[in-house]
Image (cartoon, rainbow over all chains, first blue to last red; front, side, top):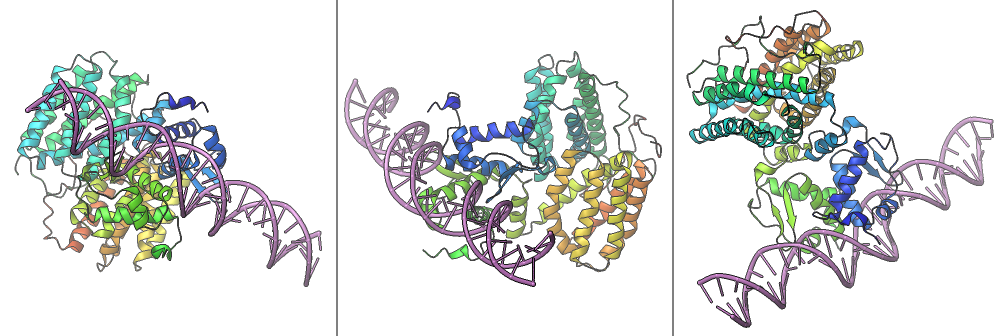
Length: 265
Length: 265
DNA sequence: TACCGTTAAATTGTATGACAATTGTGGAGG
DNA sequence: CCTCCACAATTGTCATACAATTTAACGGTA
């Protein structure tokens, strides 16, 4: 037996099979309704034993991509059931073809939770966490001319802020979104001056968090995300109106409950 | 062999093992660093074959709970690596002991996402989607006196709005958070008049979305979430100050880019 | 002819046993 | 005391067989 793709074995066999099948599903090589060969056939096709293949199918089922039932076989589930929050699914999604609509979705989601995350961070960050954020911001300034290293530093910056918000769930969301975000930044990073343009806002965010100014941190972060969203749009060659995306969330109506006071803690 | 827990077999053996081990990890029966017996021992303990046990371990590894390596065995990963966005993990988390801090985290995340989701829905909902939302709201009014059925209707309401936002990621996040939410609502639903209290706001949200009033929808949804958050606090026996949680996100500073106009589409 | 129950085949689910690959530990040798 | 090697324990993989389940076809009956 050839074990064709065993050459690049740096991980489990089942993991390789998972990736192969997962990618082929992303490429829409199967109709959502049905298909996928039987386990014996698949195991033969991939040159692996049936237990290994079954482990792979279990993982794919866990990701919501497939569903196995006796007699019926394993069917590909509709896209709405896919676990889009799974890092691997996200990565595959991006590999088979960077979807502008998906990037748009990510930007929207970031715009929803990052500003308020910054606000929580300003309210709750400990001394060490503030220190970490400041250091990350410093590294950002150092690497402003670089491309890839800057992306990592940027992710570290946002991740540090998220950690300071003391909300497990948030941290998980950020960690999940890191993969596609990294990929998207690879696009925007090519834009000349994009990094430098967002630098002042990064500083403002870090500064506001350090001083515990909740609203200032929230607003600065919002502007920052808006800016990077625009960069994404430019990189995708949008017309640039952006009027479809609500960029802010400041109601001119509706009284706020006075539960927060600026600067004090 | 006894196959002790085969009595309640309505699902796979591996699924049962997954649940058993997953729950025992949630109960912190293992130190994050190490432990878990070897595969042969575990398979004997659960009265299943090794392939079945391995499938279960694969699933648990997929959820970020464990990590298997040759010679070392399978170790329990630190809590920060757990995939808290996994529905099953979320459910187990809640089963072993409803954590107030976790409920708090969920409320915070909802407060981040749902208002802007409503806004997007107001901007993008199609006629059919509006119809679905209205119907869900109607059902809500019918069931206002019930307990459990109301919860399901409430989830359907929010889910419908989320679908109208046309953002895959959002839909996934909301769907994921629905599980623990359902559990938490089982607590708050006991509060007398809680359902009736939020009824007007539900109507306002639906109405705003129907008329395409983005800001109104966002604001109404924000108030709605604030209200339900307060209910959660009351159900948990909080003091009720709520000053720790920023309940709004209306900056009194910072000029907004004029990208949205009320009512027009 | 239409309908319903039975049967049978196909597929997943489970079990067993054996061997290979990997890796950490301890022991032997420098 | 350090280095290197061999060993042992554990996961990783394989092959095969059988059980359980479910769909679908078939045939019997009203």
